Length: 318
Picture 1 (spheres, rainbow, N blue to C red):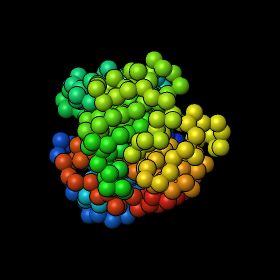
Picture 2: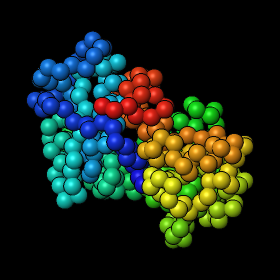
Picture 3: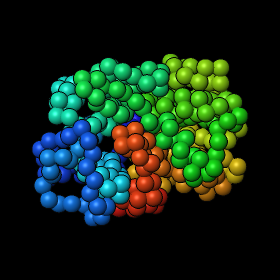
Picture 4: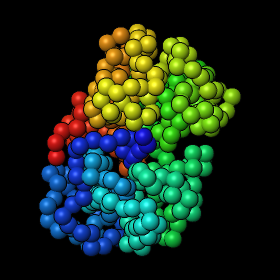
């Protein structure tokens, strides 16, 4: 699995994304509109456009999150969803830049291609080799990755948890797992334990944490203050998992970055043993909030964004 990602860390059956109106142009300056219900009239010449590209994107909650935020901020912005295959990704990005889009959210399977295509990359993107955010300025394409920061934001908001000096565990060494490892290490984790089926991938992910990172066995996660499950395995119902969550309990935080179902059997077992638990919706909301702040320069309306997807209990039907 990859968040998110994501821009979504995992799939859901919610918002189909997109809009029935096509953007007819943009301008360099934002124009204000009153906050309120989503407008259904045709987009105006001054409307600014952003969007998400991926394959698939029909499940994406990003359009709901972004549109709600822009309405609340009083911005005449729209957010569109584009299903783009790998062979067309470069052309799609160049087309969005040429059409004066502000930027794009990037989800699977394009995050590595987004990083490679950029003309300027953040330190995080250079470390991960993946980007979930592209910003256009003239002919420049700047790449950022907000997934790890979104995870840290959610840990702080929901659990008041600061990784500084703590032992943290990550299950999985794909894109989402690597983003989690890097974020936890940069936040000062004393130790970042990486558990993964494939040893080479585990060592690659652990190296992101430098001296704090090491490849571990599942039993070693018993000592972790927080455990982040960053594989798509829990989305398969009650199928076999690499790490049995019944080993976790009181005093631990257990996060499953998948959010469909909202409470997987894997996460439910940890909760039943007394662990504090959360799914990946908070990471999704917060990584989107980071994109919104990057593009608009305004503090994102987090509560409004949560309301747009039905709150922490899970997405509501479109």
